[in-house]
Image 1 (cartoon, rainbow, N blue to C red):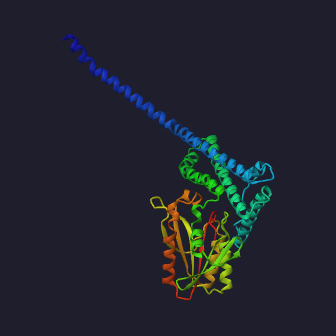
Image 2 (cartoon, rainbow, N blue to C red):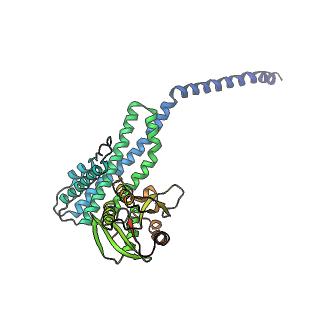
Image 3 (cartoon, rainbow, N blue to C red):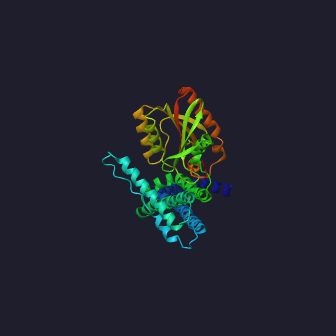
Length: 375
């Protein structure tokens, strides 16, 4: 009984000791978190970013190797293209000044044309006997490798700045957008394979639909790298245009539409633009929707030209959009996207029947990169 009573008398004291120890530990943890919690978070985020940066570097290096090896395999002169490729990977595009917006589209178009010409000339110097399709495909490949290089260097820049300054907000912002950056980078990495093999990519759905519509018709080149055909459709005359394939090329659809409208003096009942559009999460790739306006992406030169000339002649604009994910646009075309062609054509014909009269003339433009897609 004495032992039991002694043990019972010590239990409350021991419980108090445990409670005090737990409280001290909790206060110590709270103080540690208050003073060092953010630093610990920064260290964890930096480790995660560093791991992603390593993967970006691997994809960048892989893209460079694929580009160099592809050019070596095609070239017959035996010259090593490594130095020239490395120089192109560091090439930067400087946009025109926009403080005075007057004439900016004209200046922007000039700079884009100069840049495209430079890349193609560089490819010709490396492979003098390459045909137009090979030149366009290799130019696309170099541009994809350049994009991989720029993405890697940009992420590395902000990673090192955040690490040097221990800035929580720089590191936090980088970590927040890194998943989307990785998705886009993986898409560019897959695009290299498509450009190497000359395979159609998701962005080519517009030219693919246009090619289906103009099949069997007589074609001619209306603008640089842009072909057009006169196609009878639903009792109307459809002028169907696309970039000249099968090399990787987007053509000049804006200039082509402008020239055609000027030639016809505005006697066009409707313009229908077909292009890929980014889907929302939860939507299925290859879903076809309709819209109003000029569905042309990119820097805006072609979009501006079409809007200007359509406004001048008061021509209504319709859009057929095929939904695609970020990774689908520059990757090899998925079956779901290719299968949307028939649905898109049915919608085009319905729009023509409902909004125009028999005997009218319309323009149908398939927008996008026509790699792997002939006329």
